[in-house]
Image 1 (cartoon, rainbow, N blue to C red):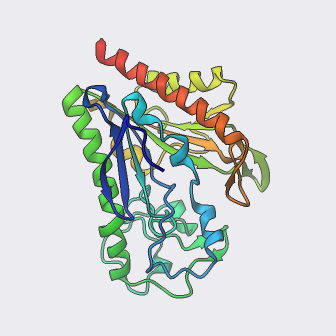
Image 2: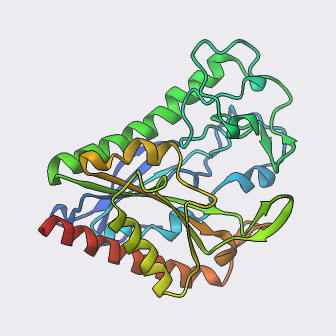
Image 3: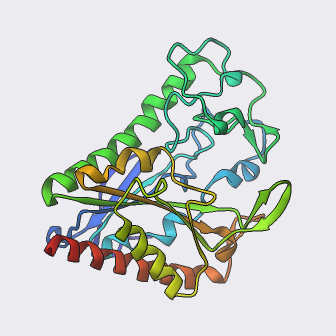
Amino acid sequence: MPLPPQISRTHHIDGVLARYEPAMPDMQLPLIFDSPHSGRAYPQDFNHVPPRDMLRRAEDAFVDDLYETAPLHGAVFLKALFPRSYVDPNRHEDEIDLTIMEEDWPNPVVRSEKAEMGLGLIRRLIKGNVEIYDRRLSIAEVRSRIDRFHRPYLQELEALAEKARAEFGAAWHINCHSMRSMGRHRGQRIPRADFVLGDRDGTSCEPDFTDIVSGTLRDMGYRVALNDPFKGAELVMRVGRPEIQRHSLQIEVNRGLYMDEDRIVKTAGFDRLQKDIDRLIATVAAYVSDRLAK
């Protein structure tokens, strides 16, 4: 589908990432949206065992479509094209599940609950207990995924944030994700909020940034939770440095609002949600413009 004339694709690495910006440079704001988990270009060397339809459950499917109008409001929009189940750009590159390796990992390992659950940099499991591989991975394979996919994405996002801060004195970033409609607590399935905002318990951005997003969504009638159960991970931690005027906020949207979670297809709710997110983007852009004018 061709891009609207108001949007330009300004950078593209085949199978890795795509960056979109306003076609008119004078529209540009120091506002960045990124979708790191909506990629669905599966590399040929993945060699996974479960069927592709099962692996797609790890995707933040269609999140890139929900936020695609961001450049119309003056923002940059960056999205990963590769799947998170291949290598996860929202994990530290040393957040390695050692049980997946055929050799000793030569670097210090960043230990985490996610890696222990099989959900580290390189996923070991899908659907909680289904093994993705019937073999162990070599150091060379893992390093290749880091060098060709993980690092370029993180470097691009970091460069965008720092460029915006250098040019405007501040930068605002929204990290876009989706979540399953049901969570678990003490073994019980519980419905999740419509949106969960993560600002690392108030450490990744100025409070007003979180407030304008939460208030706008609540005014639209959505149920919004803060930092529970998602606080933001590697990308929010890297970009979010409010002490140097870099503000980062994670948004998780409930998949039940816009897609069939089993079939991974859009439902009738997609169009309404996309329009509401477009309104949210416009409000955030106005907030950023106001902050620059002060």
